[in-house]
Image (tube, rainbow, N blue to C red):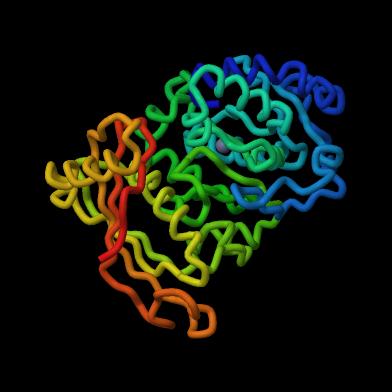
Length: 354
Ligand SMILES: [Zn+2]
């Protein structure tokens, strides 16, 4: 919930959906859970992402506490994660850093309502790009916490404002592991986590040693658990430097590339690199628009183009049989060409190859 629009929608739908969970927890921030309160029968190390669904029975087993934050928003969070959060928050105050909880637990039903509401308001394309599929959001676990900052006594909770304080986030991230939390969506790791950098989204894993390892090595939870898809597990992403595109713009282009690449059975991406601003010039834009006219004449003319280069490895001889691939080889210097209409539009993959 990092925009007013999101928050209103959420509070609106959450009221009824989570009412029963309120009864199980405490009312108000003073009513902190008892020290030994935890959710029996949930796996605190469970992986929930765009490929891994919330485990069966989770919502029945998870112990949720309810609180009202400093902005008077309702927040629900798993009991043990909340206890750990309170200790983290207190320690941070010693560093002169003040945080609060924006949102944590979100039921599958509440997410379904968000999808329906946003589809009606902003259309299917927007929802596909920006809203988690019900059942596949880490917030369903109650263990994912979105923080916001309190600076000079004032809440700072919009994404675009929060990212202006990297030195404060650094202090926060440095304290996470000691309390069993990890930073979940690392910069430059969208191809592993499915999300661009979110300094505010932390995840409780209830294992200080594991958290220390993950945080000190700077690895994703997916990599730590060995759950990365082999087609991208060894891929290095090079965002280069760009005056045209931010990392999040490139991430959404990488999404489109990897959606296609994911269908190339047995191939493994080794390197994906932004081809540079000069490769995304007027000639390139004219090129992708020419392809768009041929492939998708109903789509509005692109006003932005982006190009990536890559190296990938082809499947073994047995796996490559019947394909055009030279088996077990590195294909270097392939390029991917995409265009989009407006900075909020979805990148469309127009062509790829040598
Ligand atoms: Zn989050």
